[in-house]
Amino acid sequence: MRALAAEASKLASLPAVWIAMAAGVLVPGVVAAITASSALGAITRGAQANAAIDTGYQELAFGVVGAIILGVVGVSSEYVTESAESGGGRQITTSMIAVPSRLRLLLAKMSAIAVSGAMLAIGAAATTMGVVRAVLGEHAPAWGTDDVARLAGVVCYWTCTALLASGITVLTRHGVVPLAVLIANTSVVSVTYLLTRITPLANYLPDMAGVRMFIRNLAGSTAEIGPLTGGLVMTTWVTVLLVIAAISFTRRDA
Image (cartoon, rainbow, N blue to C red; front, side):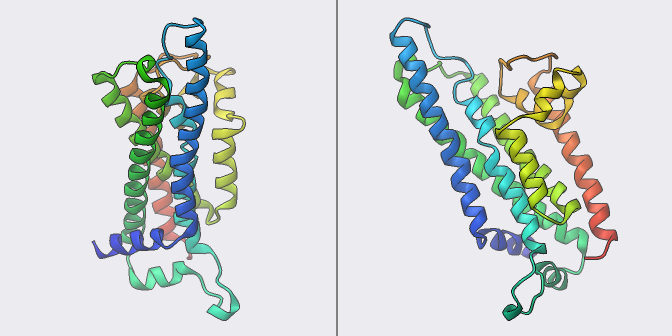
């Protein structure tokens, strides 16, 4: 528990983590407000009877960039070389002295990132869906029991994405490459989505499978994947990656 508390304290001390938190909550909320306003305009013009079933949820899929930053920075900060005035060392050295067991250190770090990612997802989901309902008013999609499962899927997706980003960063020991690749794949040009146009197997990549937990009408989908199956596929990807990261972390030099 002390190792977990220490890792949580380190996360809270990183400015980039707070930027990730702000981005994770604000980005999907702002995009949802714009989308909902456009939908409301269409509704008032009689173009459609109600807002789309995925309104708000699509924005939460896009806003996962906050979880990516959280996962990458939570690990890469350990490998940043301090200034000469501070001794020129790295945080990872101090961390290993404080927690000699590498496996326990990694478990504590991943647990802290998972909890933080889940809390961020809850905050983002509450803000985004609140914005959607505030803008659409009576035209907002009716809430039902399915929405509870979908919101749980959002939390699971964001948490798994944060852990996925962390696992990749453990392997690279540098944050620039995983951060650039993962954010670009999420917000600019989704390589994994383009791959689904080539082969249906790409639908089983972690992000494409994971969004099935809460997106009901995935544009251009070439495979039928249920929410539970999507969650299991993404969880399996994350588990395998973390096992590989743990083996690498415990066997190589710091």
